Image (cartoon, rainbow, N blue to C red; front, side, top):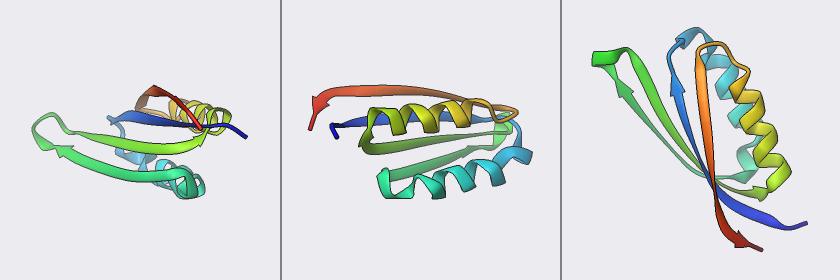
Length: 83
């Protein structure tokens, strides 16, 4: 199966959804290359970036599941590299 490299940008505005978010990220852990979280305390939000190397359908599935969480927004950028 062809794999893609992608970066997800996640904005957490509702910390009550963080446990669900972490469960999803753990579930897709084998595909995650790296993760960086930045708490922006002045605005009471958290910014997370996730780098992935996975089949496109797995990346899309994770993005869709994250997007359905209350108070969490996600956008995904894909590389043109397919391997």
